[in-house]
Image (cartoon, rainbow, N blue to C red; front, side):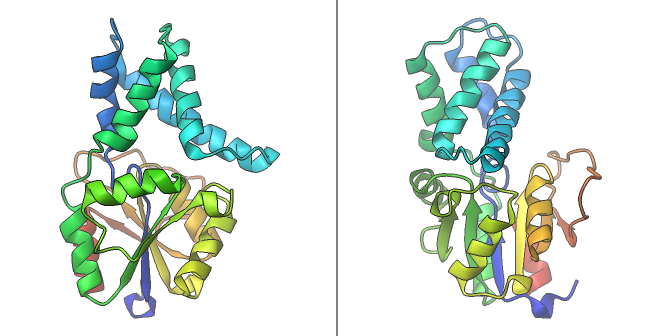
Length: 232
């Protein structure tokens, strides 16, 4: 990995800055009799990510906020829970707006990266309104340069268009960007395919099984302090 070739850092949002595992506690608090919140939470996330990729393929873009709501309804009904729309909306707002669970390393780690001379941007499927909540909750308002939403191009990850758009927005040649993403490898593969260098954020205690479909990330990091150490 040639760190001297990197001039801009981009980061994913949900599962990278935000701990999506918080969905489980919120589901348990709002759904009576829920006995397997982990399974419902996992299906919820998998379903709305699946919808986003299908939307790319069939030209059926809808705001990510809507897809999250559709995924939640499906996950609950698939597990036998008939939850009123008002309650589902409260669950969605709690997880993605009101009580965002930010990883401990995010604010200080990303500030170290900017102090080292790199501009940092968020690239997210999230709507602009969702990203406003995230930036505020993470304390990144005076740290990151900007947040780039899929809504700007109406195309979701891992389509190359969103990463190419990000390169234009950051005024950076795409090969001079390193994109950091946690969770599954979909975002890493998309960024790598589009021409970016990639860092997979694999936090201790949050490790996922190795995936083999796409290219390996250029580096694997434990958190944003780890990335700062390498860039410094």
